[in-house]
Length: 221
Image (cartoon, one colour):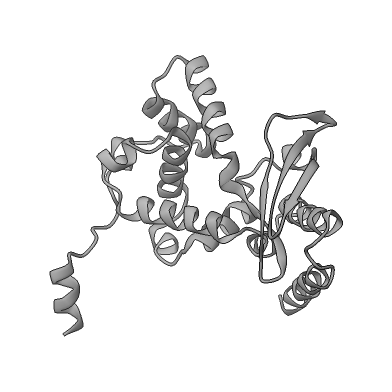
């Protein structure tokens, strides 16, 4: 474990010393991220996502722990699937300890991402403007009509994965339509397919109740 942390620090140092003003440095960050996903190195991959992405995962953790049925039902289909997936596949004791970066690391470590698909990706048409950048994705050499955004944080180009959420939603909507199920039943069937276990209606109930302001104040006294 110490050796792995040491190697991660070396990789991050190399990314920093490459600078962030050029396309080569950006592509190096992307390749490091891509390789981390393929190898299931969630610790390294989580260090290469930007704060916009971390805040998105913070919200997913919050909804997985405290979101009521109406709140979860109002999420986009991609967010809904992810929240219910957290409830179904992660123990409550573990989920309670998570922040957004922890959930992202867990996803990578436990192969929630399609590693084969990630392995086929490359970026092109990189456009840098100061400390932000956009790109287009290539999959197996074929140009896609979307890409990743990047931001410089801590001297490193980091990925803003929220730029691709609409694509995730679109893919889920297409799969739901093809299955003949509405979004909610599609999400439950997907969880059953992933886990091999029945998914009950209790999945929609929040595992925890958030304390009211009065309860929080009383507990602190």
